[in-house]
Length: 187
Image (tube, helix red, strand yellow):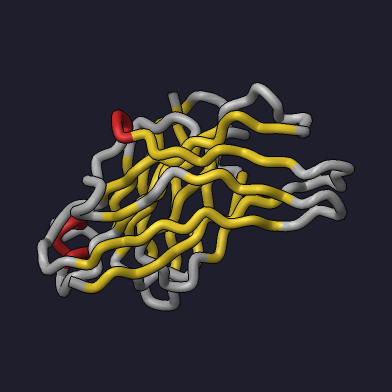
């Protein structure tokens, strides 16, 4: 099996007068991927030095296998902030693992060009495509374009829905040769 390294970039956002740190931990209760089988991650503490805004990284590893699998995910949580206005806050991020095996995306899509999961969605959804689309637009029920995003033939894109009210929206995907529309329900 091959293992690929990846990194979660965390930007400090503001100038700090003292070093700032945050613990990055794995939350297995919210994961569909399996530690040691689909990925590896060791809990760590990231430290931003005093000074201007800068980035720090938490490293994780994705394990490549020969299995056709649906998209899986694991959750990393940032907590125990020190010397920060974020002190006491807990934040998390979901890392999605998309199968790269031959026909893996075809199997996830099950004959479709587009899949939106979850749907209904909360504050984010993942748009999985056959890789043939250049951009998508999100429209409200009246047809007004609320967001347009270039995806340059990606097979998976996370859509943030935090600025959208609960309701029904339509995502239209476009390429030079095809257009596809998906109904999105935000709860």
